[in-house]
Amino acid sequence: MHMERTLEASMPMAARNQDPDVELIERYFAGDTSAFDEIMIRYERQIYRVCYRFVEHREDAMDLAQDVFVKAFEHLPTFRRESTLKTWLYRIAINHCLNHVKKHLQVAGTPAFSQQRPQQRPARRVLQDAVLGFYVSEFQQQAEVSGETFAKILPFLQQFVQDRFEVSQRRIRALNQLRQAIQRGGSDEDLKRAIRDFDAADADFQSNQEKFLSRVDPLLDARQQAKLRIFQVMADRRMRQLLTSVRNPNRGQ
Image 1 (cartoon, rainbow, N blue to C red):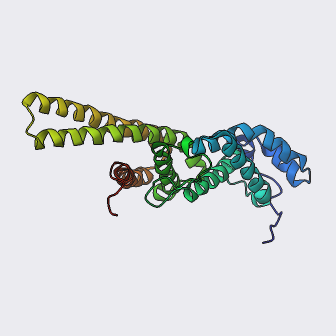
Image 2 (image 1 turned 120 degrees about the vertical axis):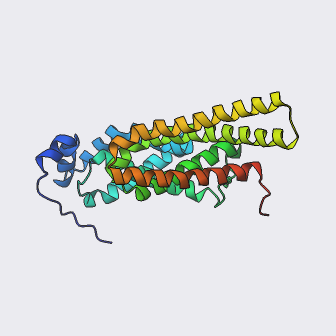
Image 3 (image 1 turned 90 degrees about the horizontal axis):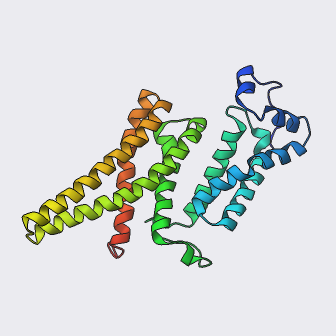
């Protein structure tokens, strides 16, 4: 596929003020390919950190980051400057890492990594990455947000998923303990203890969502906020399915 190297001769003043990489971009399109080397130096650590968040392995993250810059170099001629260069690079990194994770996850969300480092990828970590992968792959489309807005949301999303995963596990355990206390005819003291544990976990579950929404809502309009809440229900259902697959690995076989 032939890539045209035609772009607008100049950028709007607002874009120039917003993107600190304008000079490097213009040098590159003027034929100075060394400008891309400077782009790599400027962003290699940031892109590495994005990649590491997905794989949590130094060598793998370095390989993924290198792939990201290869892709960026190949597609820079088509960069339309509708977002900042940083946002554009982040989108490439996120999509590339997400595709990498998808290749190493089964549909049910159970581990399917190669046998090279199985001891370094516990099932819980793989499942958490699967949940994050689901959010990353669906969030932008479901909430109808731009790539630039999504790049701003991503740090909040990563922290939210990490906390959500832990809180959800605790909430499920508390709910199961409450059910067991009822089924075995537990004493009033046992029931009250189970109720307290569940109420505490449930409160943390609600607080986790409220904290996330309070950070993200200011970046969204009313329609996007509404769609985000609908998506959240779907995402929580997906998380429960993944957690159930760990607790009952033989279910459905």
